[in-house]
Image (cartoon, rainbow, N blue to C red):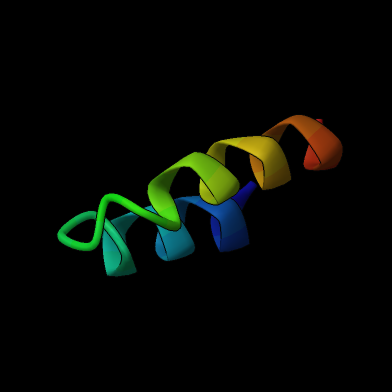
Length: 29
């Protein structure tokens, strides 16, 4: 969960990988 959050925050500006970050969160959960 911590990794997913860190990624989302890191790519929060990109917006492109933002979607991927959400998918990672789902896998983690």
